[in-house]
Image 1 (tube, rainbow, N blue to C red):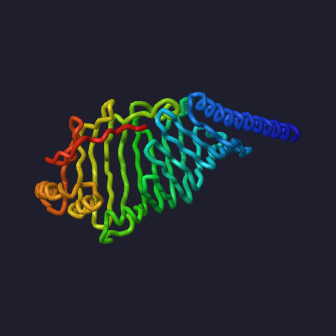
Image 2 (image 1 turned 45 degrees about the horizontal axis):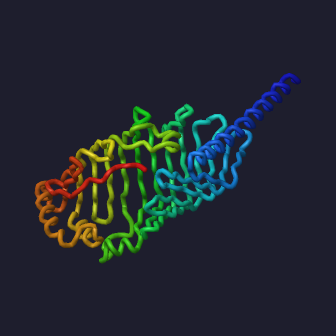
Image 3 (image 1 turned 135 degrees about the horizontal axis):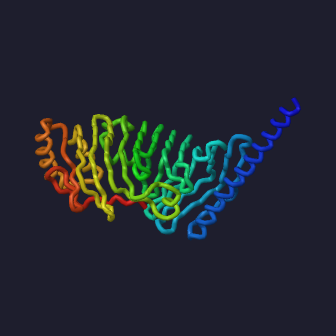
Length: 332
């Protein structure tokens, strides 16, 4: 009996030692990473960093965290970040984010609020911390930009996982109760004929990148998109139903090449919204309407557009209609 007690005591002391060493290593790694970012010219400030959770968890809290990358101008600040980890699963963490945070770029500053925002992240078991899979869930989220736009959603989910390679990911996003701001609604829907929110807003795609998403993607440079396979992007707002699917390749300059099929039900109402919002100049609307009527007749249903969005030589065309320069797909 005494031997059993000794064995239990030794095991408990051993586990306590493991937890102490592991928690100090966790804190040390984070402090070192933040100090390295400062040496690289970043803003990497925080008020306090500590780890608790004995005996089975490493729960680390960072207070008043501010990060900013001078090479891209992208910045992020949160009053509190929680990194939760089981001590026997060091490559799986839970991120718990606060109800308020700020995301900024050289173009705008976005205030993000939510009642719940957390993520589950699993890394490959390597020192590069290569992303294997992740899921983020959000509730009662609102976005407010210094450019004047706002949006909110009741709930949402963003998920990604490796798809046969650490440089290829399946990505899924869905937002429920996505609601544009009142000002944008007034601009897009002056007759107030559409419901307050989208009934469907989701996207499913496979993206190939130049490099894996790992710690070097944060420290050095973001991986860029090489291939974009859209399984489905769907947005349904009242009777307006837009669906997009197709494949693109992207060169080193961020210029896409390929074809995306666009299917738009009640496209005339969409054109009216585009005109009301200023997305399409009023003087161009009659010409565009005639061209789209021709395209819709080819699909067999004049109420529905079903035509390819073609990307060639840096130019984007919708069916036979040239629309102008294609956007560059560059991740800052």
